[in-house]
Length: 374
Ligand SMILES: Cc1cc2nc3c(=O)[nH]c(=O)nc-3n(C[C@H](O)[C@H](O)[C@H](O)COP(=O)(O)OP(=O)(O)OC[C@H]3O[C@@H](n4cnc5c(N)ncnc54)[C@H](O)[C@@H]3O)c2cc1C
Image (cartoon, rainbow, N blue to C red):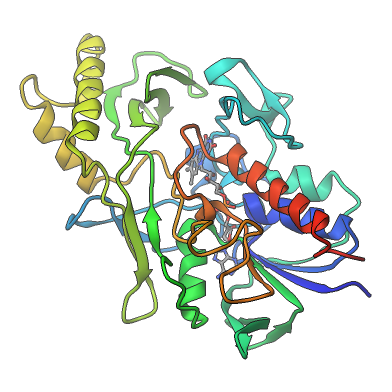
């Protein structure tokens, strides 16, 4: 039998890692907190399915701001089973991946025949991979013995032994799991980022419910989408430089603070977009839009106090600080992180395809360095 690898989380990165390891002949157990199964194409409907988002997740978006709910994907496919699949080109850094992409330019989306294709469906169901997949099962912590990982403990108390453990639990959960496992690596929890976004909301004046368009100018992406009987126009900064921090509170729960738009330049850029959108859509019936002259106050309030439309969290286990170039946690030989928490800086495009490319790259590096064998 090959080495026993345990992959924690079967989301975007976990699906790639689990499938690639199994294809290389490793014995893989993948443990996923949420459920299996397809979801509707409508992202708002998809996120209502129980076991498809992480329950009770609350974060602070701005420094010292209130706690607001935060949407993170769960279940096989993770974010890709509920997200919009926007997949603009990753510029000069194109790396291979298996995802089907339809559409052009900024409106490219991960889709197959017009419908959602989650990363789990593409990588597991489309290959000969023989990973053992356990859904509706949470990993409580990684078991460490003399500084090395020897398995994981499930929330039922069951222990799954492993020769190697890979965390793919997402940017909020992977740092938390390392902390709960007693890994005190310098930099853990730092450089948490997101694309700061706010939604201007209008009454729907006849757009079809499937509407989702994107445009981009400079560092700002604006999406327009229908939510129930409203139209939301959502500007977002795609090259933010502010960084936050994620950790655990006294109950062992996530304590995340994004510290969005700490720099005046970021606030000014987002404010200019909000003001422009408000002016361009002034013909529509506004439901939640700034009054002329009050754009700055409206922006800072909504940035702090509303659930974000963009849930693009990255960082917390940054490569170069918490991990080496193989994703291996510093000070260990056999504990890895391979998801969006590894990005030292948030990608300047929607992060799903870059996360798949990161997982593909790490899989290649593991193979090339002889870490994986059947
Ligand atoms: C509503 C929404 C819309 C989005 N829209 C887009 C978009 O249009 N385009 C784009 O590129 N990106 C989009 N994103 C972002 C994208 O989905 C994420 O960047 C991506 O999913 C991150 O991949 P990941 O593998 O790091 O984490 P995830 O895909 O979130 O996977 C983490 C997995 O780990 C599991 N897990 C967590 N804790 C545990 C535990 N203790 N035990 C076991 N399993 C655990 C979770 O259940 C989850 O399945 C969107 C995200 C959301 C939520």
